[in-house]
Length: 313
Image 1: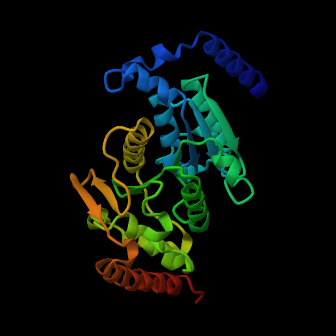
Image 2 (image 1 turned 180 degrees about the vertical axis):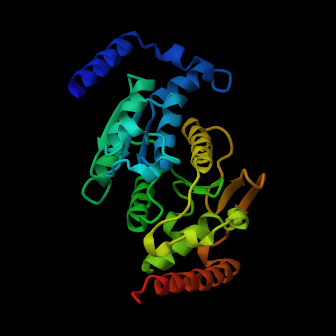
Image 3 (image 1 turned 180 degrees about the horizontal axis):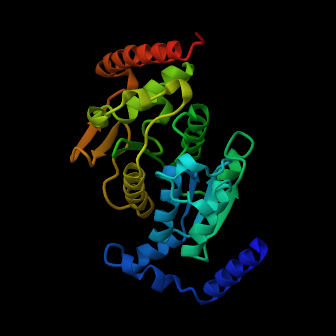
């Protein structure tokens, strides 16, 4: 039965593909973009690492923008805790590969899409292939994938590829762009050579020095750096996709102001606040060092408390 269903879906996609008209499908983008710009977007290739809460939303948003080609990477499968935020998480996709599910969803929007899937994720062995011919990289890796994230951003910097990261924080997003010839990811975050705990603090505070989201966290015990878990919302993921796609469009089309590190943007829908952040020197900034020390002490105390609560009696 499942095989027959898959054949029906496949046949339906083939039929839709034969009748697909790119110009008609994305005609409502015109006005905000010219016909020439829409054609340019069709010829662009974006790489997205991670097909979870943020990555899936990135892919579908950029596909609807009319970008014509993607490299996507993820080694994980959908499970029940993904339901609250991930675009591809449904009862019908539980246990299925995230990258394969999202590839099918994107091609259901635009059957002409070129999508190369990297089902083992991205790493040293396939980094060059993942970034080959790419015009922009959109970061969607798990928050705790520090080493992989640093490696991808470093490769983008070497290859002159613009890279954007949009973090889902509370009910908002913090966005940083790293442009060729400007401040690099490593220079900004200063995470190299640090413990995993320290990298987490530096990444979090570097992303959001304004800390807009912290004021309405109702249960801090849900933030568990030791278990690599934390609370999330679908609103944040959708906001990430909207803001990152806008930055991507400006970068790819070469129009509009692009705010790049050490400057960033933090918008929080819950607080209805927008902060334009500026962190000269990144995490080396003297004021930022004070914030890091405070966060280190507070989160360290929570970590010790959590470990004691889980010690055997």
